[in-house]
Amino acid sequence: MRYAISCLGCKVNTYEAESIGQSLRGLNFQEVDFKEEADVYLIFTCAVTNTAASKSRQKINQAIRQNENAILCVVGCYVQINAENMKENEHIDILVGSSHKQDIPQLIQEVLVKREKKVLVEDVRKEAEFETLSLSHFEHQTRAYMKIQDGCNQFCSYCIIPYARGKERSYPLEKVIETARGLSKNHAEIVLAGIHTGRYGRDLDTNLATCLKEVLNAAPNIERIRISSIEITEITDELIALMKSTTRIARHLHIPIQSGCNATLQRMNRPYTKEEFIQRIKEIREQLPHISISTDLIVGFPQESEEEFEETIQTMKDCAFSFMHVFPFSSKTGTVAEKMQGQINDKMKKERVQTCSKLSKNLYYGYKSSFINKEVAVLIEEHRGNQSFGHSSEYVPILVDGIHERNKMITVNVASMLDDELIGKVKG
Image (cartoon, rainbow, N blue to C red):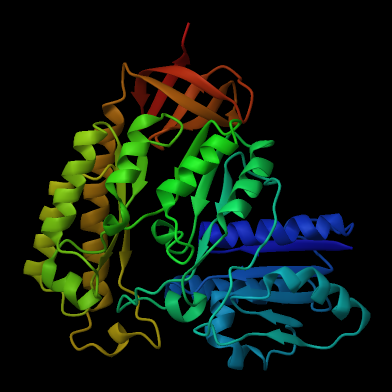
């Protein structure tokens, strides 16, 4: 029996999809590429932007075209907020929202026996427990993701995720340690992932810094642990002190700012001002001088004037991010921002994305250039011709001369930069 998985969206989705894939392989299912004909198609959807939602629909249609008789299982955020409409699609056999993902292998087996539609979509705002999805290794990637948190209580005015993922909840610490130990047998680097990773443990009377400390102590095989994304308000002095105390925590923090204008931040319902953000960035760099700090930025938010946009540009320069992920505002049905006055036209959004992307490219070029003649630790991920490729602790991509073993950390001297790409040579 052949299965194929398509996974859209975040690292949490990737973890969940990989876990289900591992369970299916344990039941003697054979994985094939999503472009191939399969007996079972699983689509882990995303709804964070209109583009992600559109891609989710495209993947559903692709699976139907490839084998209309296949069992089609559609999972995740897009399902959670569109279940009523999706129930009408006769080609979809299994609909699973933001919970019950651990039941997917059993549901597939039941549908194989008796072809009846299965719909497991519940009200996510009710009390929910963290759903345990075990995973020992990632089949197709060197770096392992570990889901430690789910849900969000923040309700930013543009965001659908609290409605799709539900309330914040955390993976019990003893389970985190157990999963980390298992993953460390096959992976040198692990990424802690969540919908709101920095709020890990608030429902368990613990916190992210404690979680990191416990994992590092319990799993000595882990050479590097990375935080997927974290809010500026959640970077505690305890966390910074821990990062400073060990090189095993990656020197990279991805901190979404979303806007650099106070008026826009207020409309977005973000819990900080630009001054507070800039000050905290300064404090982090004082403790960790060469750390990479990247961000997410939304442009074209409702009522964003030219003056507000210019204010954002100046804040991006003041923060001197190593790179930025820039998104045009995408109105989502059911959010506060959907009904706001002063929607910005697509042409202006596109122009503002281009302006910020150009700034990001310049910032990134400058940051990468600063590594020339420096020594870095690179996790080898793949081979490219007679070179190896991987990322440094700061998440800077580096090409290394020679073929080196995948999933191994090596020390490299950065010798040059060619066409925006850093070239390194093994030390010694």
